[in-house]
Image 1 (cartoon, helix red, strand yellow):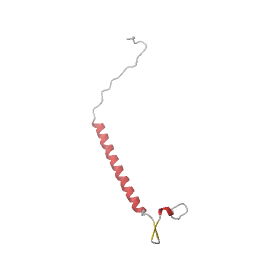
Image 2 (spheres, one colour):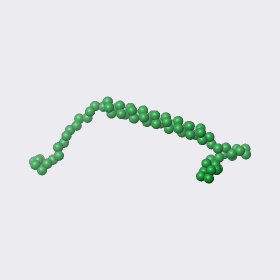
Image 3 (cartoon, helix red, strand yellow):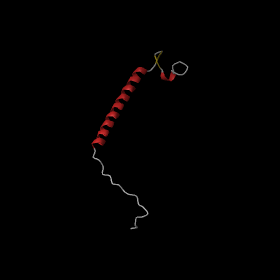
Image 4 (cartoon, helix red, strand yellow):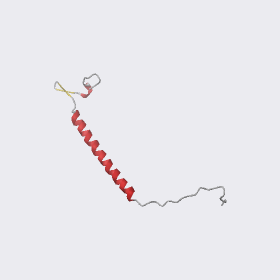
Length: 74
């Protein structure tokens, strides 16, 4: 529907003297289901990568002291 409350003609189909509108309920359900599936897939991948991070060994950290003016030149 457009802003004035009338159906927008570009979304209607004219077949044998009858105007048909798209099945918005079916379209919405298809989109909703696909989006839900993708969200679930992303959540699963997030869980898997979080587990990979948790299970990974701790890195070896090396502290590098900043050079001071008192350090001799090499």
